[in-house]
View 1 (spheres, chains in turn yellow, orange):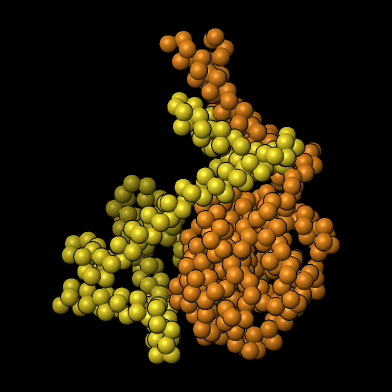
View 2 (view 1 turned 180 degrees about the vertical axis):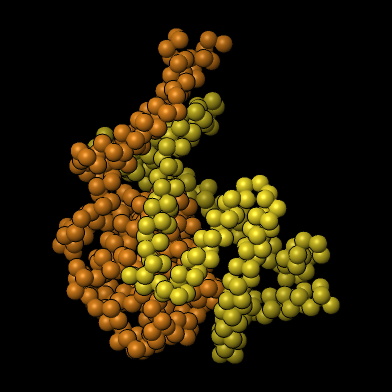
Length: 207
Length: 279
């Protein structure tokens, strides 16, 4: 029962949603309305389960002092402090919650992003070698796109940005489209496997 | 020969220092390098520019502070453009951590154009259940977002006195740093409800968006800081904005940083070939 009920629900709902997508009848539309409401409710509960899950996971690590448990402590303190401040102090422009966001989260996020430039420069210098014909082609394409994407490229030659645009619009797009088709077909296959009960990983690893 | 080989062994700290100088120097002494407005930026700009006065423009903030340097200047430019064109702006977000940035942008731009909250623009914030939210907006905005970010009923504001759906929104822009983002909007809103979608993305992910441009699922694309600077230029040229241009100021830094990376790659390759020849 613990296995057959979720599997049956998944099968029925999966088939109904596929049918619903292709039939724009009023009954089908009202069915979608009901589903949207249900999804919203389920998501709200999922959020609560997420908080519970993250709390227990990190609590266990702190309790056993396993690995880098100090980070778990920081995670839990940040989680509950922000929730407490947000719930009782509000999230408006003058709130403490906003103060934390503007003066902790924003600078930390921007720092993470900006250090990428340093690591990218160092990694490109060490790893980007014209070892083969393909690597040389990649190197030339990368140079053209890098120059075409900044004003200095236009200053060197106005044609560079056109060439960069062509590289993105033609060879890049051909490759991307192939990847997208592959991903979409893979997605459809996986969805069918889940709907038909062949793929059961979502039920939990041990089942 | 030894010197050529040595070019491949530059200390990491020297590279970091060179990068620091390449980024900071143009901020102190601007080089005023002028780029050309790209076709994709112009497409997005024109799509917004062609909207009739008092049309709705939906902006989805699908990024967080880690992508702020590239995407936030785009957001400010689009907001200024929309306010200058007297459009009604609805701002929401698919990323919870982006709500603060969304609100900050509105608080920066709305006073410049004397826009009133609830009349000219509204901020809906973030809501759990992304798929449900996107489908829901196709059925009823009021049902999907009964209240705005501040907890007040949306129908208490003149801007949303009447309930609206995607049919009433001629254009939307997703400023996206990943998933959920513009691809999610294409899958759930554009394909199903036919809303026109434009996107602003980070430079590294711009290449991924090109197939959607050719298929017509995306109307215009802002890729990275360069496009943000181009949008600022277009706004200024049309007389829509006189504010500071953060993206344009940062473009010099990005130009030098790109140049430095290329020089480093060339040096690394010279060293590589010198070593290979020796063997």
